[in-house]
Length: 291
Figure 1 (spheres, rainbow, N blue to C red):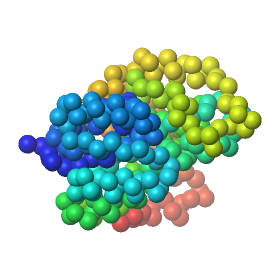
Figure 2 (spheres, rainbow, N blue to C red):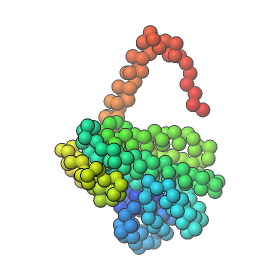
Figure 3 (cartoon, rainbow, N blue to C red):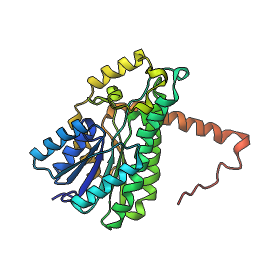
Figure 4 (cartoon, rainbow, N blue to C red):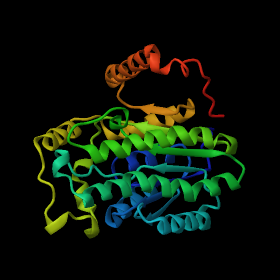
């Protein structure tokens, strides 16, 4: 028997891709699964797949950028399963690509509303429900390797995923007293349709004059790398493995370690230079306490 048996997980963006992979893996751990997604057609297909596998499942339409809809998901989950133990903030979009001088406000707002505020709204709504039952629980936020370092020509995606990593680190400390564990999943390239996010792009986020940002060569390269990424089924199993180990950062691509180490080495070197500055000697030995 695992720690997940009989407990309930809500997964956003769960109709396919990483979200459905996580839903399947958690269902195999005997959890009750709530599939939430903006794509109602694929949501129905996902529900049928889990039901055919004998997994208790509820499917709810959800636009993560609408806080009121999160409340609806919570209410329907409680009505069906009685309690909420886990939230997986997976829903996300790739967003517009291209140089910053071509960026349009609506494209940026779309990325901010879905990739960042969607995570904020979901966590804000679900934490009180998880805490109320007194059994502890989990928040899993899906970021990206982009959250560990900038990606050129994809500023909105990089900015929002970096923010999700930082939020996860903050909430890990904040929610510890409520016995809610926080993890952040940072995959690199996985075989999903993230490059085709526009299929679910609401009208209000369409760029001016109905014209979308012209795809750059970088976008085409990204699509190719996604299509040649790891099999999506691995990701859900890796999440279960990491949750059992109590991991804060969940990585699926250990081959990216050297790149992340280069970034941290550069940061560490910058601290060394700051410590040597005569302007900053009065703060070099000051203690830092966030407790």
